[in-house]
Image (cartoon, rainbow, N blue to C red; front, top):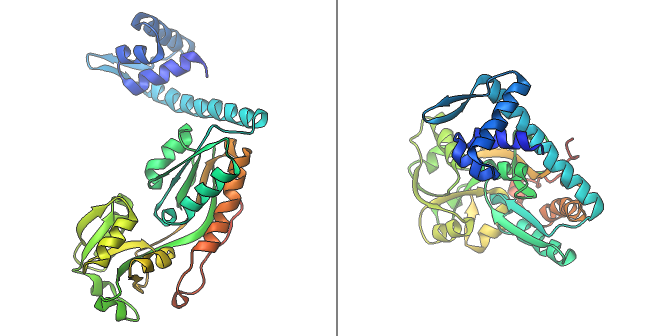
Amino acid sequence: MDRTLLAFLVVADEGNLTSAASRVGLTQPALTKLIRRLERDYDAILFERTPRGMTLTRAGAKLRDRARRIEVHYRQSREEIRSMITGTLPYFSIEAGAAYHMEIAPDLTRILSAEFPETTVRLDFNNADLTLPRLVSGDIDLMLGAIQDRPPEGIETAEMFRVEIVPYCRKSDRLADLETVDASDISGRRWITRRDEAIVARMASYFSDRCLPAPDVAIEVEALAAGFRIVAQSDKLTLAPLSLTNVAAEFGLVPLRLSPPIWRFGSGAWFRASSREYPIMRRALDLVPQLVSETMAIPASYGPVATKSFPLAR
């Protein structure tokens, strides 16, 4: 990417010439001269110089948005060319949401590692809101999670199935014997939730819309397995995807038949268009729907699993 635009972006991010100069490997006078030359080229003042630092003007903000898109195109063009020439990656990083924690993501990682031994496969767990910027920047290669918004430029998605977020309780809980559960039946119970702001907000909205008190969150956990284990030994409830019914059963938990569910959304793969032609990416996109179909079993009372491989968006 053009060094001048790259330096401009660093100054815009830092808001300070001294720290920006250190990041781009220039002296402060050299960086100042570069910014002034850029302002001459655009015939516009790009920064307001204040005692507290450098603040973007309206023109500067417009250039920043364009420059970031140029940066994305530049980085992804390099990735496309590298995939054509080498076809291999030293690392392949996956981040997966809650619906993929127990079976799909670990199985995907195991298979890819066996089939592509020259690549180190990395797996981490996070929600889509936190992961998407890292996917765009190239820090990760594949994101598995909710697909609700239009993807940013250069990102493609493939929806694999519909996720339903429902309450779970232990088998001995009185709620487990109910054929259907109303929101009022679970109001007043204490909850164990993942540290996921989107899920907590949806749950709060669900109760508020029904004029019920806000849910009482007693414990927040990072891993779903931890939440399942705690619920199995208490009278608390937890939220998890309905597709994890079989996994929850191993902990002695059952899903509650709550209609409508707390949350329903599409889920699948997010990836950079520029990485599509890497063999390991093509294989991963083939494997995910297979693993979804094989591992996500839903009790018959809920009907068939809505598993479908959608065409990749362009």
